[in-house]
Length: 249
Image 1 (cartoon, rainbow, N blue to C red):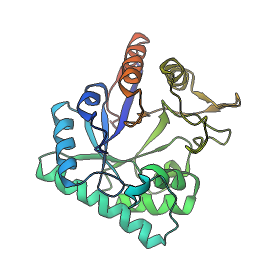
Image 2: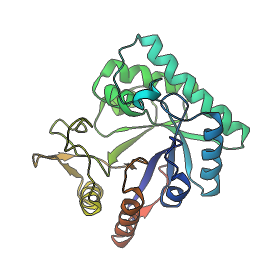
Image 3: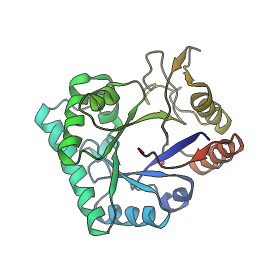
Image 4: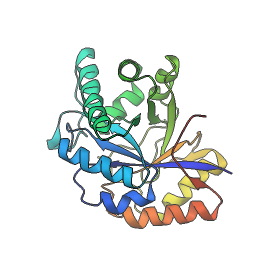
């Protein structure tokens, strides 16, 4: 039986985390830089524990004004430190609450920059290994995030997106473009089913890109998030696809 992990970015102040949690299997929790704080982290970890949802760190740039979605050019040590500092911050809270950190998924501009820049990807992968080499890196399928982590034996979850369009290079269409977001739940489900069952994503130009879908992301700030999740979960189940946290045997 096929299965897929559904992950969602949470603890970002969207006020719908409690309603979203029953639909997902992994939560990427903001670590205080692009959004959130220690109290919100504890609240979101508690929600995840209540719903048996895997807990992941979601580190981003220290830029709440731009929600972590603006590129920042930093030194290698600065990239490393902002990444490890945030993972440690959430890890200390999960340990305090009797939970375990499962994965790490970079946020926003940090994610997109590392996906297309091998040097940044290497820095973030090494940071994860130095914090806890049992953590799984969630990263864009076929990107440098995945290859960099695999090169140093960090486990990876190849990620696809339910609510974003892709360019012909396999990267996500930038949010500054009008056609970057998928707002139609039927279109989202079509994209997901093609990825899981047929092994490809179709770009805006109609190009088919081969992918291996292990976890799929639905953004918590999507204005149609609950309708989208209901459509996705119903559609997956009707096609015999189980929703479960991404794990290694």
